[in-house]
Length: 478
Image 1 (cartoon, rainbow, N blue to C red):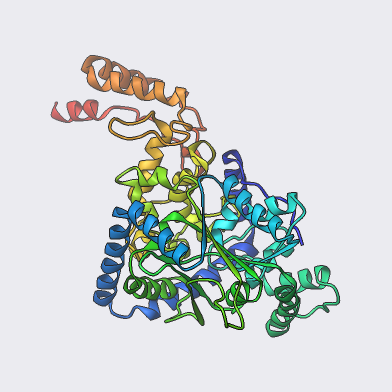
Image 2: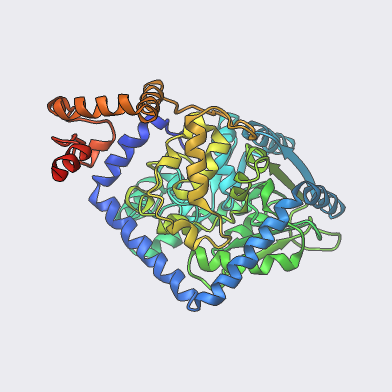
């Protein structure tokens, strides 16, 4: 199965997509119901605020400690993986990551890759790169399978098909799955999907997965999942390819439980997931199952840009739980597809500019109310509003003194806006000019335009008063 290519939505289309989403009552109802459910589930897992605060601080310290030593830990991880018999590949760009995986598939004459859940594979557009060379990629996570079947991208990083209703999925399966009858029973729909996937697990030469944590100390790849499809992808096919961002490394196994506990409870409100897989190498002599070959693809794709900046480095603390999205008043009203990027919502606003450049994503940091809900629930305490504000400034200006320029720096710069602020600075630094301007503004207030760019999209027009405050106070003193 190969879905039609869905490329990233240009920044110019975000407003139209967001408006369409807000005008869709069914979509808004689906997201509101789903987000309320996830918020309640998460809250039930953290009844003690003090305990939660201690856990979040510990998780933040682990991630910051790891990032402070990231280059050394990545080298240590590579050495331990190689010792364990795992082949390590480095990919600086999305294209390089796809090329590495295509080369492995060609060496094994593979025509099908069955995939567990991997946001990095979505990020690098792997499925479409494989389809272009005649290799099918089948998503085995049920949510990912549903959106792939319908030719869509995931709308949420944890629950890819959260935007779809049961009726929509029933129609989709009846139309697209050979021999499937229309049914709205959730159990029967899952059974239909599993029947298709079970056959593919057996016939596929290669299985692909993501990685939640890569342990440098032991060379262990940790994979969190609920459906068992990840275990099937990593054990049944002869070849297992894992793909992950370079930031997913941790130093020791003892660093995993604090992060794992917060990840599951923040993401789905579960105390623990159904499966926690630890992969430390291919099948050994005498073992009856498991892959004969294991590869790890470590992807940069803009992450070192964030890493190079002391403030923006906090972006890489993310453990991809999606809690910030669930609590975001913007995301919960427009959904993930409006953003048009792999990572939507608050986390997308700080991650995507590094992956795709500010020229393509300068709208994302502005798609936020800056209410702070995202940072309040982030299990690793990423200061998301601060980073959004920083990226807004980077999109409007040239490189600031002391900072390395970001890809697409100044892409949202508006010469007219620059002129307005220059004029404002002149008026407010010359008292006589300022008084003359106010006098003219009050006398010519009838010339105020009724439409004032984005301001009047949801507000009444700004109009000068009939008299200035100075004139009011002068008349009162008489």
